[in-house]
Length: 431
Ligand SMILES: Cc1cc2nc3c(=O)[nH]c(=O)nc-3n(C[C@H](O)[C@H](O)[C@H](O)COP(=O)(O)OP(=O)(O)OC[C@H]3O[C@@H](n4cnc5c(N)ncnc54)[C@H](O)[C@@H]3O)c2cc1C
Image 1 (cartoon, protein in one colour):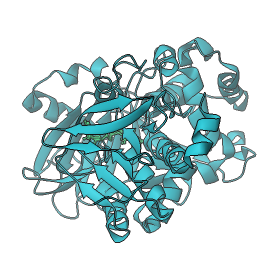
Image 2: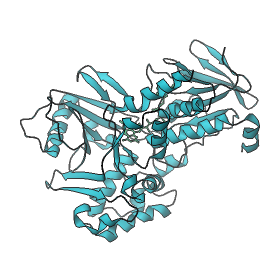
Image 3: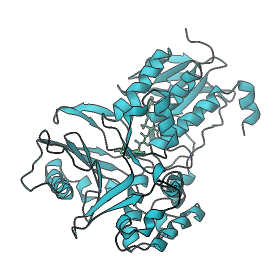
Image 4: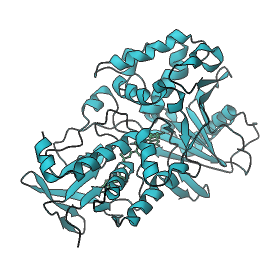
């Protein structure tokens, strides 16, 4: 028998986990259901038989200014599971010219790093960076390429790679407003807020397992392989949840949070305006012989190549191609794409031509993020819905941020706050 006032959270990606842990921490009864056999959604770890080790579905980068992500980790007791790099330093290599450089920001809000040519993108002047501030005044209809003039060393060496990485969309498609929101919380506050934070033991150990342990410890009900099929509604409320093998009737004080991406929300809430499909992300993972990867940079940006970023974690070198629908390698068979990708990663890392991986695997996420164009951003739904006891969470809910870990976790915080509010308060504020 469930307690009255249970919040049913549907979807155990980071948005659902974020909502669930906030509610559980506040003493609210939580029932979390997930259609897959494991939690984590698009941010998960799993054992890969070919590589013979646990890998992440894709490289994920969090920055030290991502306050919701860090607050979530603190709440579930996993703050040590993400390790901040000692400085906001982003090494790059251009495989065309062979040039290597680092964007290396100082910690404070005044960008002294722009004064030194050695810490800027080569060929740029300090004044070039002021153009980034134009994003702050961008219209809701503008793309990044509408606001910042394409071409030139700053564009090629910073704007384009950062835009593709953060937005999973090229500048000609990415919403200027969304990119600004991400920059304003991180890079533009100074290096202290832009340090790369990586999970040395993987995404699952950082974001997923501690949250599940936290929920179990607070008596939350967790159900896997339990996909929501439909909602029954009456009188402006959700009255029951329909699963393949069960119908769960809701009491008057019960609430529901759907923490699902747009493609999964659409069949449950027909008529709700939602962003369409967005970019794909291709990751390739290479397992090197023990010790070969020791001392390599944990993160490296790559220009003039298919590969955009190389991440090194233990013996695994992983490459990322965001907005991968634009890459010819997305459609190529794995046995054709892997040698090209390894050759680029190896050269980027400065490894000898004789260095070959012991095993390799490509992981393609076709629906990595929803449409992040200005049109997609305008179609994002709010956390509140016309149904008084139903709230939405997920990286494509209108948080103002691009679809990232930070957005997913923040959306969960908001949905939890709304779902925990007393019924009268909700009625008074519902618009
Ligand atoms: C390869 C890749 C790389 C990325 N890199 C970064 C990065 O570097 N930095 C960053 O910040 N972000 C990155 N992201 C984005 C980040 O992973 C997502 O924004 C975030 O994980 C989304 O979480 P979510 O909870 O909103 O959605 P999801 O993770 O999609 O969670 C939704 C959950 O709901 C479940 N579900 C679906 N339908 C139902 C149903 N009917 N009933 C019950 N459960 C259901 C799904 O199985 C899933 O577990 C990346 C994403 C990918 C794919």
